[in-house]
Image (cartoon, rainbow, N blue to C red; front, side, top):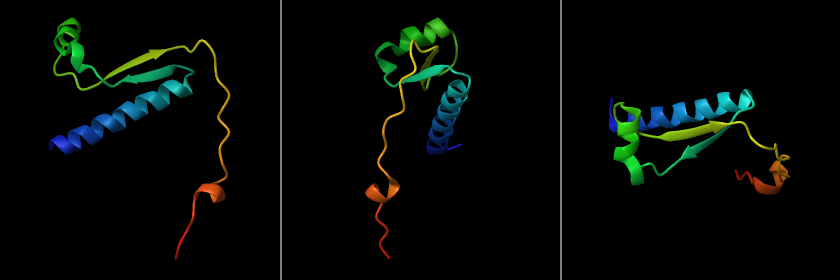
Amino acid sequence: LSIRRQRQMCIRDRENMALMAAEMGIGSLWNGNIFFAYDELKNWLDAGEMVLAMSFGYPAHHPSPLNRKKEEDVIEIRR
């Protein structure tokens, strides 16, 4: 597989994990910068190449959904 395809699959899998966790009431956070401690994390996990890190846990509180603008206020269709 090409590097581009591998990255796409990784992003897809990350999103699927976050969605499944949310469905189970578990919060998730993509830890974007793992490279500051890459070698230490890789040794601690005793696994192959690390491409992303995610944290999972139960949230202390569940915030209210944000107020969203109506679609017609933000989308303009031009023909």
